[in-house]
Structure formats: structure tokens, C-alpha cells
Length: 126
Length: 447
Image (cartoon, rainbow over all chains, first blue to last red; front, side, top):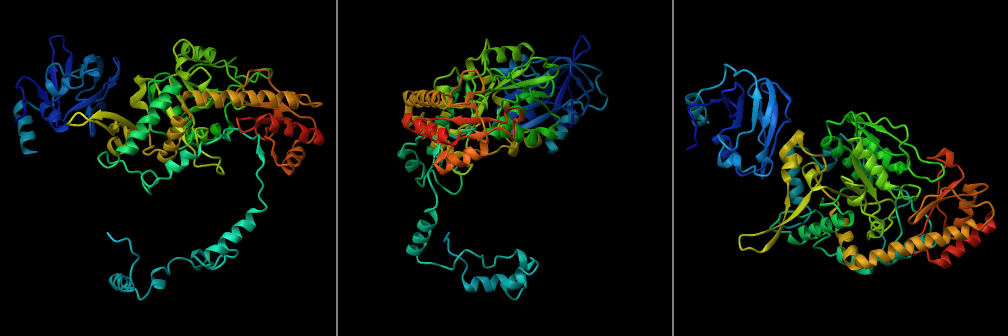
């Protein structure tokens, strides 16, 4: 059973979002998504300062036999990316909501994201 | 599965299933002129000995001239063992067997090939080969633009780089929004010059070593200039020359970022233009942008060495539109030949061939330039090729040489109008002093 923390927001495409105290938004992929992909071997992230448009591909996660796009869950600007993933992409598998975060983005939390219950329902029906 | 042609019964059953009366009716949509018919000049079936006699008769007119023609394809000695081994059924199959569990030998050969190419280039990784030198350069250009995307989409391809390579690159990348700029060369030295180049938006500089004129470029200065401008450096090298020249990985302060070239000098015979063998190597930091296949070494569950294709997530069957390139195969058989050639020659053997080729070229130049009116076109140092200026009617002289069983070289007029009297000549270990003397004597008669 994959973890779906109650404190986060989610997208239909398996990204999670967390509003930070400074107003920025941290983005990652869900436990469900990492489990589906299997062992990650590479994560390709956008540069700091890159403008993101909600719904566009903004990063790529690669496992041994698949490469999947990560879609920007909001429109905004990249403030930071998780440097540690360059040498340790497995952090996404081990701790998708913590050490395995992908991006920190400036922008507004979109209203159409899912809450934990809705996302749980999405993954269970899939 | 029995590999037996269809029986008459099977043919009848198939025709009935698709609802046509006979084979002719099956193909009646194809215009008669396009169907296989009798070919004039090709006789009906002959007994084997008659075919043999016919071939002998027809090859009698062929001669075997001494080759002083290089220009990207070089005649070197190939130890007999190379093709004896390459032709074994395990390598010489109709299709490249890549299932790791079924083809450890093939994968190990590719791994060894990569290791040797990376070693020759002094770069960290190499792929399992590409189609030929020109397409390898085109892939290197695409790779450099991807890897250095922020810099821009202009690439410098010096005019002193092989004209056929420049044409191939243009054909492959022209529609991808990449602008190709061609820096000129110094009329005295024959070396590429970057004077007056606008470095704005330049993603990469290709550095040929040796260049098309056989001249050795000042690779350190070119590399440092490109890096200072934020451009990547693509070394386009003759792998055999690397046995005695500084490898691309050590050019300038930081080394070239990518190296590529034509592997034909490594055990591939001159065969009417192909198939040839492209190779490519790069710094480890660029490995995810490296096109083509990479064979890797690992260990199995029992800890035994095993080989497998790796980094496949770059390839089009997984990444589709985002794949690193459309190259999804390699030149396996010729990479096998090159691997065997390099293993049999060893570092000392490659060095001997390279030194001997260079020594023979020097002797050839000395002899030819002793003739009235024959002068070297450039002052830059050379490896195994150089441009000479000849007085008089160049095509007539080349015909005259051919009548004397000497393939004299490549006239440059077509590609370099400013070198209309220029002849590109080449020497290898197969053009020893006696052959050079013979060339000089023949040319003396024709001048």
C-alpha cells in the first residue's frame, strides 16, 4: 500500500506539492509513482530560474527500463532543485516525500489539485 | 522451425485464403516494367566452373595499382587472422544478437572495442560504434548542441575538415535549426584559423586532426579558444594517428569534450566506399547525451562477469521523441574487426604502422618535390597525407600514372578552387620507399 500523506496536495499525474512557510512550493513524485517506475537510475531536473507552465513536462525520471516525464503541477519559476539526486537518484525510491523531493518553485498553489483522500481514491481505482 | 520454401500445396492454400487464382494475379497491381524479368548480360544458370572461368576472364582487365590515394580511406595491412575470425558464424550472423543471455561474446567484443577507443582518445566513455565517420560527426554535432543548449545552436565546421563529412553533417542537421559556420584555413600552413569568428551562440567547434589536407592542427590553441568562448570541442580524428599523436582527451587545458572519426584504418579493407565504421567517445559527464549503444560489464547473481547493453533509457524505444538520437544500432561486425585488429597489433604495432606511414610520406614528399615545379602546398606538419602543387594538366598526369599502375592521389580542384593545382597524396606502411621511388620516376616522365 503506497503512502499518501494527508498534509500534501496531489495531481492526476502523480506529482505532490507542499506549500512551505516562505510561500514557495516543493514538488516531488508520489510513493505510488516511484513504486510503479521501479529503481530509478537518473533524474533530469530543470535549471534554477527556468519558467514552468502548469501541465508541461519539466523533469524526467528514468528507471532501468523506462523514462517518464514529470509534469509541472503549477506555473512558476524554479527556485531550487534537489542536487543530491544527481549522485543518488534512489533517494526518490527511498523517501519520495522527504529526501527525494525534486524542485522548489515560486508560484501559487493551483486550486484544482487533489487532497490526500481524492488521490488515494485515484490510485486505488487505477 | 524448418527453413524450407513453400510447397506447392502451401502456395495453393495461401492463394485460396486470399482469394486469387494464381501467383501472377497476386502481383498484377505491380506494373510489368517493374517486375523481375530477364536481365541482359546475366546468363542463365551456369555450372560453377564456368562461372569461375567467366569471373577470371572478366577480372583479367583489373589491375592492382599502388595506392597513394587517401582522403579519408586508407590502405593498411590487415593481418589475415582479423577477417578469418570476424567471418566465424558466431559474429557473422544475419542479425546482431543482443539478448545478453545469448550473446556474451558479441557484447564482450563491443565492450573491448569501447575500452580501446576510449583509451586511444583518452576520454572516459565510448559507444559501441556508429555507421561511419561522417555520420558520427553529425551525431557529435547534435550531441554538442543538446549538451551545450544554453550556448546556442551554431557549430563551427572548419573548411579544412573533410568536404564529404561537412556535406553529410549539413544533410543531417540542416533541418534541426543548427547553423553551420565554416572557418577558413591559413594559405601558408594549411591549418584552420578562427580569426574573425563571431563566437556568439556557438555550441561547438569541430577540430579535425589531421585535417583534410593531412596537416596537423594546433589542437591545443583551438581547444582552449573554443572553451574560453563557452563552446564544446569535437575532435575528428584518425584513430591510427592517435597511436603517435596527443589524444583528444589531452588537447589544451581541459581536453576535447567529444571525439569521433572513421574507424576504417583499423582493419577494414578498402571496399568501394564501405561499409565503414564510425566511433565516438566523450567525457563521462556527457554520457547521457552520447548516442548509440553502450555495452557495459557487470556481475551476475553468482558474481561472475557478465556483459549487457546499458543506459538504454536514452534510446528511442524507451524515450521516444526524447531519445538521445535516432541511432539505435551500431556497426557490430566492423567494430569486431577493429577490435581484433587493435588486439593483434597491440599498442606497439599501431605505433609502428603510424610511424612507418609518416616516414614513407616524408620520403614520398622529398622525392616528388625534387621534381621540377612540384612543391608542398602547406608548411604545417603532417601525418600520412599532404597536398602538393603540380605544374601542368593534373587529370592527364593522374591518367598517365594510372596507366603505370599508380593511383596518384586526389585532385582538390572540385572542393577547393583555390587549390586547383593541388593533389592530396597519401602514404602508409604499404607504400614503402621502393614504391615512392617508382611514383617519382613515373611522375618525372609525365611532367
